[in-house]
Image 1 (tube, one colour):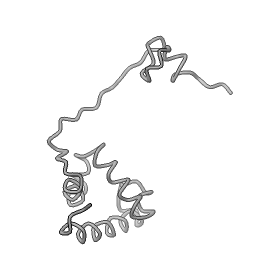
Image 2: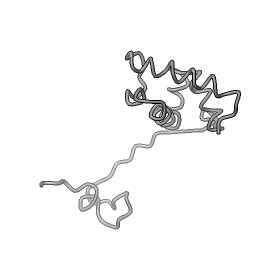
Image 3: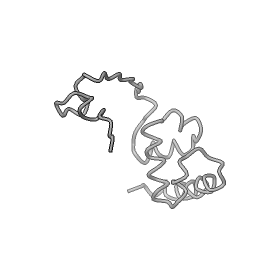
Image 4: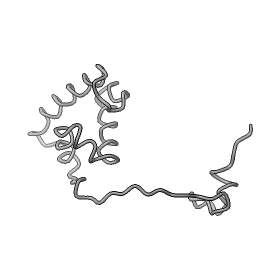
Length: 109
């Protein structure tokens, strides 16, 4: 549960950010403007997947989410890993099949 001192600023900020989404003044996923629950879902995903971008574009929102989740995302060393999978490599889903016979299979139906 969100501590009492964060509740009012959080609710105010949610309303401001949803208005920005609805006015097309935000790059936050438009589905986040649907309601407060979806907003929380979208910004949580943003917080964990692209924390540096969120901190840059929405610093106040980022700071509140750090408190909500008790996480210091900027302290993490996050790197994007580019994975190259060949057709005959084992499938990354760990099915035991070759990639071309599993997740890489082309559906001709």
